[in-house]
Image (tube, rainbow, N blue to C red; front, side, top):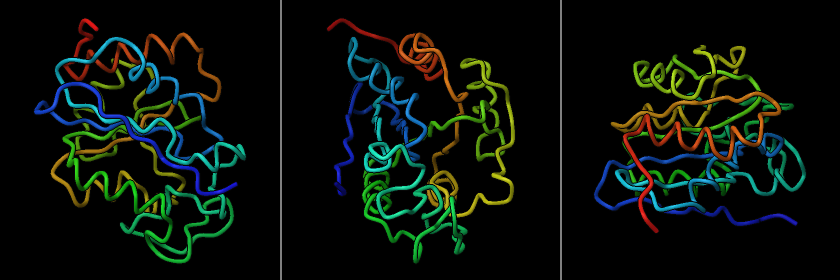
Length: 205
């Protein structure tokens, strides 16, 4: 089966600072989805306007594959510094060729968030080589992964964060957790830490 829908939830309070969190662009990196579903499923969030995409690549998740159903690495398909890559980092026939890319680009254009946090595995670090390194350092201190520079071994072409940072006033960054983070960390600790660093709280239901 292909063409599974990408689902977005809007949480928090309209009119507050807009934040978007994304997980599972690569279907073999599933654990950080638990952070976003925990934010979605527990008490209401106050203090920010939060959009969450727990599963960016549902077809890849179903196949336990980094790439999507047609074999494209969705985090190499964006039209910023796109190059023609093959193999595990297959970037597609052209920039933004894939429907998943177009859908998320459209969503981010409509929302125009102040911050985008993109969760990956398994490199275990918060990327400080980004548009707002000061916030990246704060996030690393809050979430506990070390600060790092994620240069993809020279293959950081066509990434979602690179595209967003080049075209929006807001900033996007990548947070990498380890290959097998503890469930307690994903479902309880990380959601609480994220809300704290973003100046948000949980309110009554």
